[in-house]
Length: 62
Image (cartoon, rainbow, N blue to C red; front, side, top):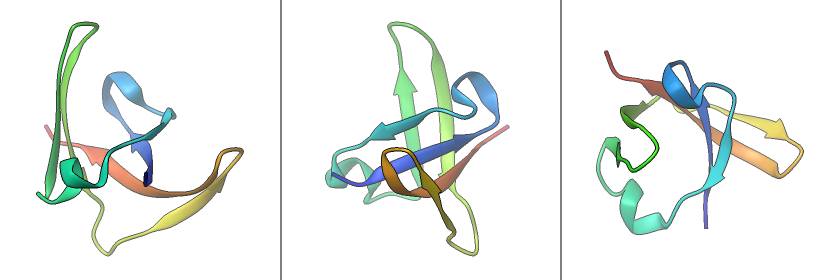
């Protein structure tokens, strides 16, 4: 599973494994139960190193 690094919003700084099929779109929607949020792939695509490994940066969509 790809690693996603969240920038901004309720998940700022968190890194998660996200199933590849959820990344087929340009937006990643979280619909609870803890919180709601929409993230989009940072352009140009960037990755950075995390303790879990390299993660792609996704930013909160306002």
